[in-house]
Amino acid sequence: SIAALKPRVKWAAVIGIFVFAAGVVFAAAEPFANGLVETGESFGIDEFLLVQWVAPLASESPEFILAALLALRGRAGAAMTLLIASKVNQWTLLVGSLPIAFSISGGTLDALPVEGRQAHEVFLTAAQSLFAVAVLWNLRFGLREALLIFVLFSIQLAIPIDEVRVGFGFMYIVLAIGWTIRERRDILPLFRHARAAASGKAGAIGGQGED
Image 1 (cartoon, helix red, strand yellow):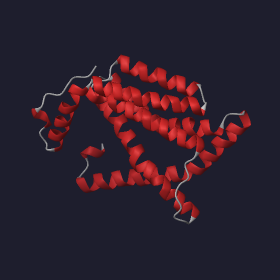
Image 2: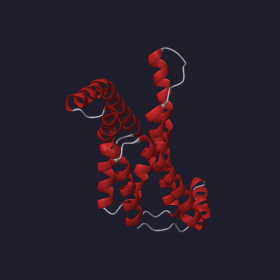
Image 3: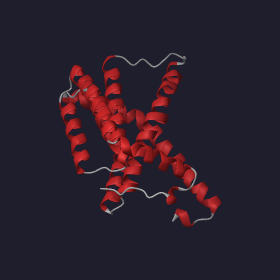
């Protein structure tokens, strides 16, 4: 395995894998996007829906599969860590790279326009993320929380009306505030745990279990 190799060989192998993966993604991105849009037009499916949901599912399915395998093997903490790390990456590196890619493609330093439906979707996704953070204040994620998020997501997905989706965004914010008030006693211990982990002393603090 790669872990058993010598450090220099291991780093060379890891870098090579990343370069190869980046090359494959770069080569396949445009044909995949164009094919997706053309397929939607052929079957009368909303182009925005395809780009918003089908493309991310295709690109992120390895993460979902790996997280599911980890959870099935009793490593729920590792599975959740994987998904959270992916979300952090999406809201930082990926979102931050969009204006850069837009500027490069247009040859200007103009801002990336986010209007209408795109603005509604950004607001809804941000509100969902805020609610997810509130749910995880106590470092537990049980069946009740999972069902609540799944039901809310399914309903807002089934009603593709901008006003309804904005309403769901505000509902997520209200739920996040209510959940934070409810779990307020777990917030300070969480920050203490994070501070201890950053200083290499997380083992001295008893973490809370997983559902």
